Length: 254
Ligand SMILES: Cc1ncc(COP(=O)(O)O)c(C=O)c1O
Image (cartoon, rainbow, N blue to C red; front, side):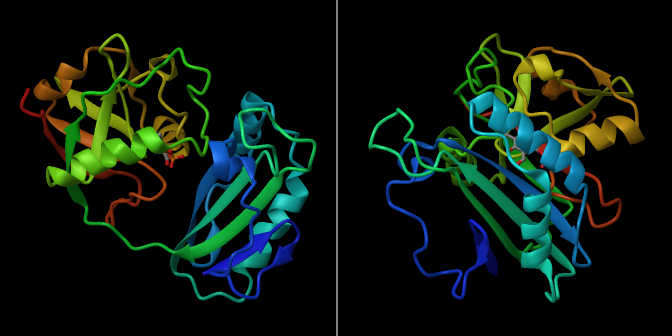
C-alpha cells in the first residue's frame, strides 16, 4: 500500500497520520472515490474525478483542484507493480470542532493505492429490510457516511451473501451497498433510474453506453422474476467480460 496525505507521500502508510479531530473521522463529513487500477493505470479516472467534484459540491466542501488530485494519483502509482489494484481518494471537511458544524481549517485529501483481489465471477445477494432514502440530503452522493452500508453488508455476510440490495422508501429496487444492479426480465436488460436514489455508478454509466438497458423504477420483488441479475461496480469485475459480475438472489425470510 502507498499513501499520500495533503501533498506528501507518507513514509509508513500504516502509521497514524490524520488528526483525530478530522470531520471525516468524527462525523463522516467527506466524500470518496474508488478507482480501479489495471496494469498500473487508473481506469476511467476522469469520470471518477467528475463524480468526486459533484459529491464534494453536494456536501458543500471547497472545490477540489483536479490537477493536484491527478498528480497525487500518479504519485501513489509511480513505480508500483499493480496488475490489478485500486486507488482510494478521500476528501473531508478537515479539522473541526466535535459536532456537526465545520471548522475554519483546510479540507483533508488522502490518496491511497493498494492491491485489489479479484472476486469470483458469480456471487449471492440478499435484500435488506432497511430502505435507501432517495429523498435524503446525501442521495446520489458518494460520501464517507457509509455506516448504513456497513450494517447491510454485515447482514448479507451473516447470510452467506457478498452483497446486500436495498429498496428505496417507496419499495422500488435501488442498489447494493457498493454496486448498481442490472437485471433481465422477459429478455430485456433493465436497471433502476437515478431517481431511485442509487449512486450514479461509473460501471453503470459505462454499461449503459456499451449495452443499452431500459432505466425503470419498479418494486424490488421484480428480482424474483429476473432471468439474470448483474452487479456493476468498480471492484466487482467478471474475469471473462471485465464489466459486471453475475449474482444469484435470495429474499430474506420475513
Ligand atoms: C452505494 C454504491 N452504489 C454503486 C456503486 C458502484 O459505483 P462504481 O461503478 O462507480 O464503482 C458504489 C461503488 O462503490 C457504491 O458505493
